[in-house]
Length: 174
Figure 1 (cartoon, rainbow, N blue to C red):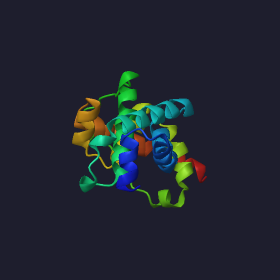
Figure 2 (cartoon, rainbow, N blue to C red; figure 1 turned 90 degrees about the vertical axis):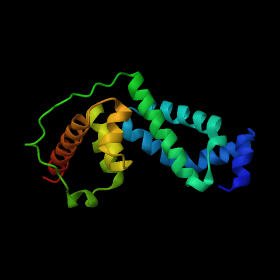
Figure 3 (spheres, rainbow, N blue to C red; figure 1 turned 60 degrees about the vertical axis):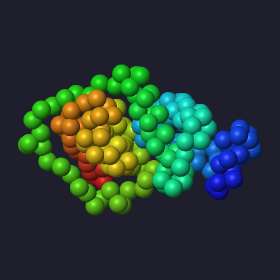
């Protein structure tokens, strides 16, 4: 979307806003579905996120990155805010030394849609940390700050999420 259209959106041009919404709604809905297992929750997050996008679009700076990346960050933050409001509990586990991480080439064989469905089956805490770390590229330090949990809890939640996904994937191929 060009800078002229973005300016139109900032000035509440409904046609330009609809164009922006239509351009990003599908990808942003998929992003929201990774955080919420229910479509209605994801739709609510999508709607709230786009309200924030249109409200704060004047803050977007094209010299700092692409519009899609900026919208994605707004959506992730919206999802995290909704999860915090719902008081998602993260189970702290101090000793993670004996847990084994999991990297799997079999994931590349899965369709994205299938993987998204499997991610949605994870408990909310695992799913949130998994999405932030694996999909969004956050560090454990950033996750701990965002979710108000320790870095060890973030690492543990991620390992448990990977283990659960591995088990679900292996079961699907048996």
